[in-house]
Length: 231
Image (cartoon, rainbow, N blue to C red; front, side):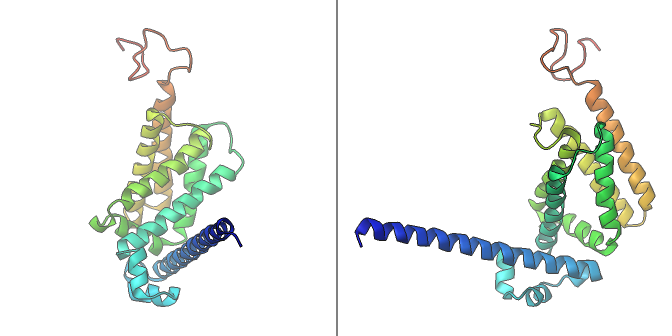
């Protein structure tokens, strides 16, 4: 065997080993998240004890802490996984109607349906996300929420501009706030749905009322607001 052939085989073996390692790590991470969700759904935030998660997931406690240094980060990651899954489902699903507000409301109601079946899980997610220990996970959750909303409004292939991002961010943050009010008993699930629908309709009404027609921007149009100058 030549030196070049041996080197090529070694490189391929290394690449294969890296793929296997990454696949194993991903499977382990998913198993940990699934266990955490199950515990939270059954007993809420307090039921998610790191030692219990490690035992049920079949990993060493030290390994669990390498993946998730705190319970807050573990539960935040579980919420982010759920939101990203919803975004992936939406991108592959048939388009729901022609009205952006209707599409977003349908998608948000589907999310609410799933959460309504697991109030303890919602409480665990919210408690984790409102903790200072959640850190950058809050940004990741908000980004995942924006992706879900953006796909519903604009479609999966739309390239969002700054105005689009602001609209999705407003809806997403309002939803998370309304979700908290529902979880602590300040709103019923019907009031939660109504609040979400109102936010979506108001935000998107403003979004489309002041959006210039692409390729037809007038010299008299304020590029920052999309409104006629002087208005």
